[in-house]
Every structure is written in structure tokens, then in C-alpha cells.
Amino acid sequence: MTARSSGTSGLVAAMLLLSSGCVHTGGQGDFARFAEAAGKVHAQADLSFARANAISRRTAVDAFVASRRPGISERAFPPALDADAVAAWDAALSDLERYGSLVATLLDGGRGGHAAEAVAGLGRELQTGAAGAKIDPGVGAGFAALAGILVDASARSSARTIMRAADPAVRSTVNAMAGAIGRDRSEGLQGTVWSNWTTSLGGIRDQYAAAAEKGDEVRQRALAIDFLAGVDEREADLRGLASLRASLLALADAHAAAVAGSPRAQSAVIDGIDRRLSAVRSNLDLLGGAGR
Image 1 (cartoon, one colour):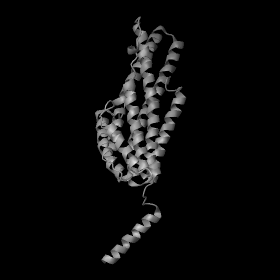
Image 2: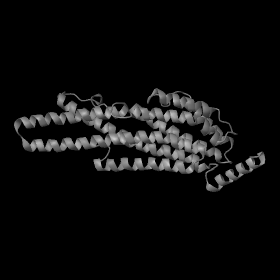
Image 3: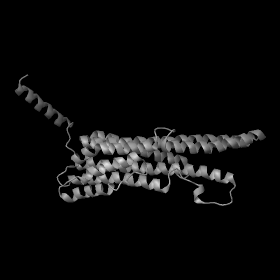
Image 4: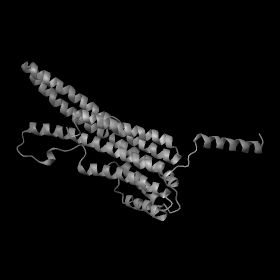
């Protein structure tokens, strides 16, 4: 093949890609959709954490009543995630939302240097080292890396340039957040919820044994129903946390799709996040709410 024919073939291939929609320059909506995705994951996390704390408190109440202690204090009812931990998650997910929104404003020609300065300002905030550190050291390290990239943003930096540079840091950050949730019931928040449910169901087992010893079949039947209902709730809670972990991992994919200029891929990822959020809400409705 001659150089001329090679060049012609390349031009034809490029035209085919453009006509098929495979080449996409990226618009403000594509970059802003990362912020949308982060907001959905944030909502899912809020619901999952409220539910995790509900079962933790329920277990603590059972243990406290059984102890017959005369005094009562807040310390006797520890949550799965204390107020500081919940605040850390809230701040981390809010920072990811802000990052997506601010980077998207770089596409607004009228904002110019103001948009770039806002991006750099977020970077300076994240440089304090507080972001994500209480969730997991890996989350803190990821935000620190992201901070350095954002601080270096200038008025001439494009949204795609910044997001491409930030992509490894964003993926590292959300991967560490997913790790804090846990891959299964043996680790992370999933492990905590499993442990609390084991304790709660253990109490029902003890009551059932006492009823069986007395031959109280009515009581046995009621306790068996309670036990199975608890098992169903436990499985729903663990599915919810596994779903949150999946959404966190998908958040990195939504970011990568924005960098690649792939709106269809990004939409598919965000649709998946939205389905998981809807499923969590439906499960909570069936279970009677997060605070049951």
C-alpha cells in the first residue's frame, strides 16, 4: 500500500467513526453527569448507613436490656458508623460531587479563569489531608493525589485534560471507599452488619431453646417466624451494602467514560447506579424503613 493510499484509508476510517457517533468530543452534560452519578451514590450510601446503624442499635438495645443495668447512656448503644464516620463519608461523596460540577463549568466559555480558580480552590481544600482519612487511609491518599492535580489547574486547562489526569486518583479513591464497605460478610461494614445480625439472631435462638424446653409450641412458632424474618432482613441488608460497593466501583467507570468521551457507556453505568438506588429504596419500604 502506498503512502497516499494509506493516508486515504485513514481519512475514510476517521469519517466512518465520526458518522457512526464513535468519536465524541464531549460536552458539559457528559462531564456534569459524573457529579450526577456521585449524587446518586451519595443517596444510596445515606440509606445503607442508616439501615446499618438501625440493626446495630437494635442489637445494643437487646444486650442492654438483658444486662439489667440500672443506668442508661448513649455509650451503651454504639452505632455501626458513629457520627464522625458518617460525616466523613458525607464530606467525601460531597467533594466528589463538587469536583464533577466544577470541572464541568470549565466548558462554559464565559466562566474562564473563574471556573479554573474554583477547581484549584477545591484542590487546596482537599490538600489539608482531612478528606476521606477517617474512612480509610486509601481514601485519604486518593483525595491527596486528586488535590495535587486540581491545584495545578489553570485557566487554559480543559475539563477533559483535568479529568484525564485525575482519573487514576478518582478510581483509587472510590476503590478504597468500596473496600471500606467490604467485598463480603467477612470484612468492612458488611462484616460489622453480619456480626450484629449474628448477635441479634442468636438472642432469638436462645429464646427458642427456652420455649422448646418448656414445650411452649405457640411461643416456638412465633419465635421461628421472628427468626426467619430476621434472616430475610439480614440478607436484604447485606445485599444493600454489596449494591453500594458496586455503585462505588461504577462511579470510577462513569468518570472514565467521561474522560473517553463515551456518553453511551457513561449513561449505561449511571443507569445501573440508579437501578441499585431504586432497589435499595424499595427494599427499605418493604422492611419498614431504615430505622426499623
